[in-house]
Length: 290
Image (cartoon, rainbow, N blue to C red; front, side, top):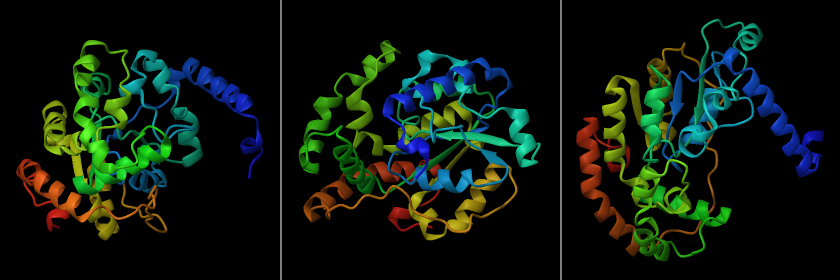
């Protein structure tokens, strides 16, 4: 364990403030992202992020997996955002790669009602990666994740689903009318709403064009990681490379979902999955496609 891990919280926070201060003052000589991993939450984004972060021609923010600028920190400004990334000249000298790709990941970017438009405005030519997961499994996993982290008060998944409509009522409208507003409910209690993938993907296609959005299914990625990872690297236009092993990160132990709940949700998502399949022009891995 490092000395930094033993440091008091106040000292750690002071160190982070110092790093952010220096980063903001040197923002203009730092990299900006060439691509973003924009979602979905509990869809396998951490596993893909860590695999990509090991690539010799790819770099990440200095101290974060994701900066959360375009969703909850947009008021801080572009210099604050760019200050999180490495100094271009130094990282090129260290890696020996002149043509580097920088990126960050946020599972909330795709779902936040303002983030995609902000990205399209501020990052010209950026490419987007999207990892999707069986919407039923994603919703169940998200509930457990938020409960363990303390954002969800209801231990019962079924009760949380019952409360979701009233929790989310008016939240998108408030986010759209007040850009400084941060919605705990929209970010942490959107179990079914985040799993309605087709409208979110359609908005990305409209803003960025299909050629700049790559959508992969986490089931396919974990089943055939080398093949799916090669497709990602080809999309990003970087040399093919594989980590020593593809690992699954951030999995949480949980009890099985009620069979009745699973059956109800699978029926519920049938038309939504059909809409997504038609939009992507291919079958979905969690519906038996490859």
